[in-house]
Length: 346
Image (cartoon, rainbow, N blue to C red):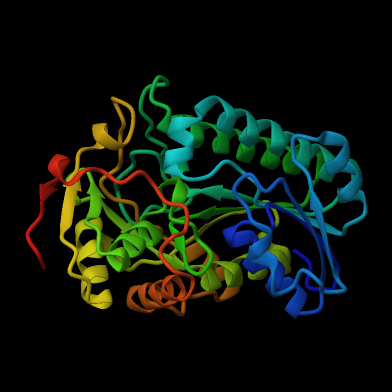
């Protein structure tokens, strides 16, 4: 959207992806204002750059419309990453998550419109809901469950975010681009909030059973955060991205049961891989999708982007980081072994 050096407002900049993006922007000569309420982010994620002369950290919420407007006016462009994230958080706090994801984005879009600042909106593969066709491109249909299932409130909220942003582009000329992020992993991702790779790695290193939810046959693709940040930068810098929607993810597909077996092998853990029924992890009626694979042709053809890291490299970097900082990071509740159905070892 603009390749010149400028000041970016990064909402959620102390989070997993936001902190990596902040570092990348600073490294190439830009200035960054990070807005984060630290509800899921962490100052420690920015430890390497917290004293950087071109970084300003503001603890605050995107729900504070006046603060968002003030900071937007002081910056040249906005990257909106702040959101309630993770399946566990969405399911356990659906109302708070829904309000944060819609009202916060309304405030960011209003501020960007008021000051006519370019906006990069981070959306999600959850947009596609239960559409298991694959690979899915940006024009694929959304298939959602009924409104009483908390899982689909997140998809709905992010769809509203996209609609608001793109309507401002069409009706008012606001420079907007939308990125739909598929499963992103790497250093600094917490095992909390239902993030599967750090959770399974933590369990393997601790010698605990690796808990695979459901039947383990659900298939996902995992992208390294460095590749995702590279995609975000390319979209930010390309004038042809304005008004577009772009999938960001990899095409290397694996089942969650296979993923757990690979983690056991790469950590040389004695832990068994086990199945845990969804109803023991989430509320009754939880729904999941069998397959989620992105078609990234649009992003590749516009920017030349391609992922550099494969799944084994991703796993090895996550394992190495967790070994460095220990396995005591906040995690998800640990089911009792008596409640688990054992999978055969791979």
